[in-house]
Image 1 (cartoon, rainbow over the protein chains, first blue to last red):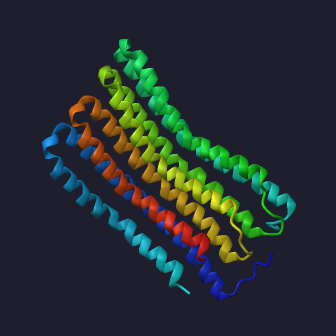
Image 2 (image 1 turned 180 degrees about the vertical axis):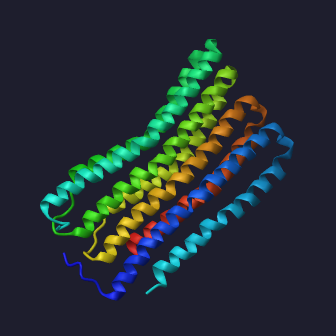
Image 3 (image 1 turned 135 degrees about the vertical axis):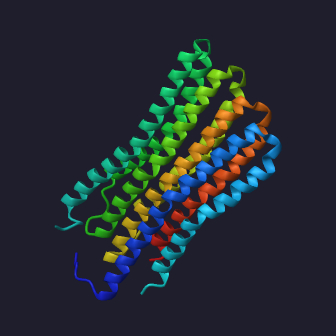
Length: 85
Length: 241
């Protein structure tokens, strides 16, 4: 095959590679962190079932904040895929 | 080197199969090891509960074996499907498929093994609560399986994708496989941790079974979202580049 590339192709190639890496690696933190929060919330609810409402609320708020790096990466990945020319 | 010659297709099919099965069995082996260690520990502490612990252990490790079986299936497909000669993009897509399933199953298998280990330990302590512990364990493991299933879907799409030859597409296929593979690991690990905590505590506090299962499922659904983002980006890379 022909390896000779135009400048636009080089940029597009770099953009798709970085989109995949950006999304993949940025999930490492949020995925483990949210699972840990969920596990600890389950533990707390088992001990104090009467506080289930407030524990679930706190867990969801914490997970929503933990989610934000993954959302930033999703935005950047989609920008790299569809906006970078 | 010509990427799409007969020789390099054969070479790539061996390498792809090795990546898929080699990395794919890593998580299952570690997870089953963790589960068995906790099971043996539980039997040492409560020898009279060895029957229930062994039963829970076998059910749990059978489930945590399944991501490795996905990897084996994809590995066999990759070994005997070297791709079409003359299309280097398809060769790279097959490499992406191997990476997706190989890396993507590590987290799920490890997480499910962790769940099985905690279930064994708590069944050893409370042999009377065996039924609800196994039920919670299986429910949690089923959710923790889903990142591995996403990886399987992306691997299958990459194997059977019909694509023209260009360097941009080549990069997109490899990137899609890596994105899904790496993105599935933390989701599987996190969901497995949550399921393990649920299985551990449901045996100890069986009265709180309802809120425990509900919270576990809600939390796992949120954790799943990171794997879903990776799935979406991988799909965009495969079809919209």
